[in-house]
Length: 233
Image 1 (cartoon, one colour):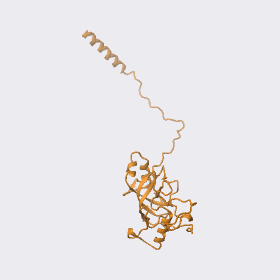
Image 2 (spheres, helix red, strand yellow):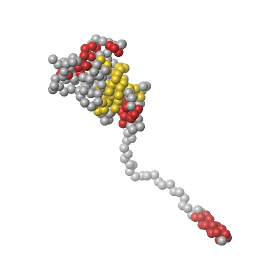
Image 3 (cartoon, rainbow, N blue to C red):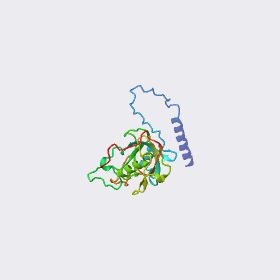
Image 4 (cartoon, rainbow, N blue to C red):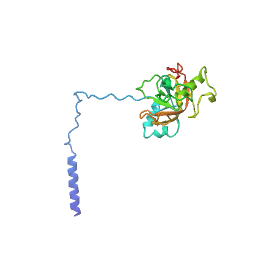
């Protein structure tokens, strides 16, 4: 039996060696493709904006992290700082019925928004660019009206106690008042929604909403903000 097994193994090895002999075809390189070239889409351009600059998030960085399952908690669990240029505000176009001293009630038919502004990474960025709405620094335009009166003629505020206080929300109205073109650092709570609004929940499912505790001006705007419409009588 041992002789038979050895003989079978020898025959098998011989067959394998014959199969690996010189009968294989030599490799022949294929000619280059001469047909129509495929039409491929242009690769998307990557946003070069960093997620953070120093201790502050950029608008692109904050909004990216907010939409990320990996990074969402980094920007939502605790207050953060976001910096950017103010590209829009709603103080200028506030309706007359909402412009008056604190303590006076708006007219029953007065339709108004909560005071807010938008920041972007680029100065003058349009609505097609990422922007974050910032609110929570004044509950209504009556607070803005009285802050504007207090800030008239001031060039700077050295003591935070000199800032106009929104007593109901326990926040200081920023000086100078938010104006387009200013570069600011905003400290506060960031997320998809904010319930700190006298007009209901404010939300943005794409870029998020910043509920501010503090607004610091890094670069002043070219012009101070002012009401376009006259105060209510």
